[in-house]
Length: 234
Image (cartoon, one colour):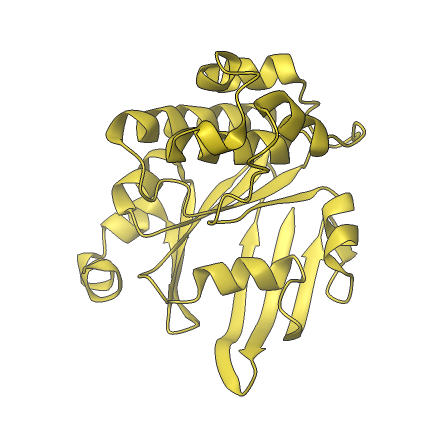
């Protein structure tokens, strides 16, 4: 397995947020972590990359236990994280933002160059010298993903990549994620948008109130409208 999460519990102060979270991601697989807003999706991602101080459990990435490692070491191992907040450098240009994310090649991951990323996100190729602060939300989302890929990760956590985007940009995001998969990147996507998840994902887990309540293929989820409606309907 590319990533295995076992018995993950996380707290923010006295508040217990995640309860014995467990899931797996295989080589070259796209897995969706589905749930309503506030279900615990972002906290799960932040816990995996070491950004939640109060956490217990076991996180194994490419056969290595990274549970106790700090964030910069986990990222250096090849685990990329794209936060929901799109933390780009607004004063830097597109090319300068990409340069910030650059890391050496990895034997077990695709090698991303600026040229490959501009082919993946043509919008970025048309604005190489534009400051990040003068880009739309969708363009900033693309830049955040592209900057993460410059680190040549073998697995990427994408937190709510379709949220707030226009339908046209969402279509481009679907194409980009499927291309990343073809290149050999394993991906975990946290989503509220079931339609978006269905277009890109091999399997899905549903999280509600900090607990995993379903795990299976997208076809298995579609065959259980009772589960889907109970945990995903607004």
